[in-house]
Length: 408
Ligand code: UTP
Image (cartoon, rainbow, N blue to C red; front, side):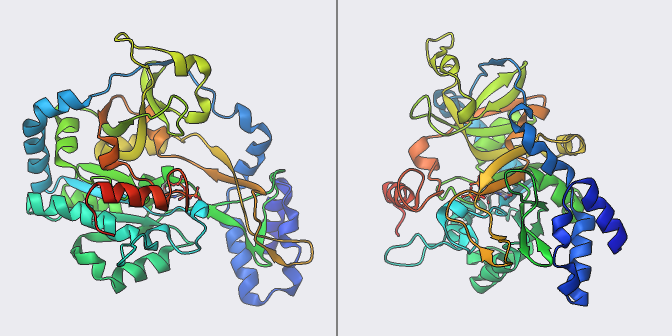
């Protein structure tokens, strides 16, 4: 994009401050900045003034969950169906590792965090070890697709190489990068992180499939005959990945998506709860849970919204293309964003100072016709690491690993 065009684009969106240092930039820096302006969607920044009205909810009602007793009864049958699909190469795993992990407070990718006490136990290593259990059981490699972002791609790929993929077969590992979105102050003015570069952050975990399309990974998947994608978060060090019983249950019930859920430990626990919204599967976020929803009971007299998602979903690939063509809702989230102050000094704030713009994988559920919420045993499969200490932390995950006999 040329200077004049860039100027006009910025003027249209009230972002002319981006060119403040343009005259002092080198030829290379000028080019980089103009190209970044050309590639940036500034439209979304304007949404922050009406962020409360952005995603109106429909009528929330309970959804049926496949609970542990039913799963136990059918475990053998589902496991066989799942293993057959895995052996036929129909199941892939997608690790969402593009996030910044800011709450953990490390600049490195979250997966390289070492939770070991007497030896090294990296988060990525735990996930690969969990997946290897199924590889051994099925006697078949499972393609593993790893999403990174501009902020952590080099570090992530180098780490896997250095660690020899923790014993995984590199022929079955594919990296791809997600897109970035501009980050702004509270008035929607984009921050600068260099005189020649606007502040950006990964555009949320909802863009994973579109990024797979962009990177040509979806073509590869189709060629290979992969029909199901088990999408999972980087931070749950206990989760079962490509779990044959879960795969089998989702296939057997002909669901467009399976969602692993855990029984909530309190009505206001900070996890999204599975539900129906206007009759379609959906997830109501913890901050959207009203007193009424928290008190609601189902026909058995149990809390009606008692199952929380753990970011482990099994998507039917053929249903995804149509979804990504439609736009997922935009979420505007308060974050700490490094920025240049008026004197051109880089500031790394200690508390939130603006907005990130994200799309979320959980919004994909509402776009699909059917969803199987599938209960898993909480202490056996859910040890998320969001913080260093306290709830959902390195400490709590270590405790849960110990309970499950994992040496640290
Ligand atoms: P989180 O919601 O925990 O976000 O991501 P985060 O950015 O990693 O952490 P904080 O909020 O800054 O502390 C849940 C999952 O989604 C992935 C993360 O890597 C994690 O596996 N994710 C998140 C992405 O892949 N891309 C994103 O843009 C955001």
